[in-house]
Length: 157
Image (cartoon, rainbow, N blue to C red; front, side, top):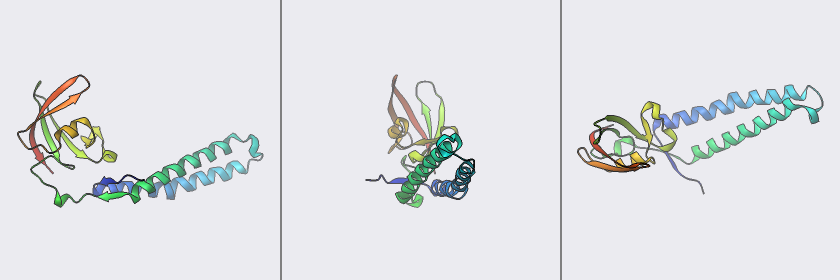
């Protein structure tokens, strides 16, 4: 049983692009490596051939997993999202009540998370604590060293 994954339009486009790259560039490259290694003679003692075959197996596994993810992908309709509450695709500005630090995060699907870009998974502890909150609400979020309080300063899309 496969799990449905939700994607933004950009995330779905990236997934399709990555899959196309693997199919149209990486697959032929590895096939050429196998052919080149096969031309070198005895396959029973050919490390290049073994390595290329292993790389081919790993690539086919990646392609298979990406095809499955794509078949179970659902596009998030941003026009249907409530702007007054923190939901997936919300850009949330939060203030740490303890030290006053202000941070801005975009809540995205797990497969699109990238902390360097300020995108956190809706499945992360911080995002789970923020979901459903409105501007002015305080979210108490359990972290490994206790509980942190964050005030919702702003919500945008």
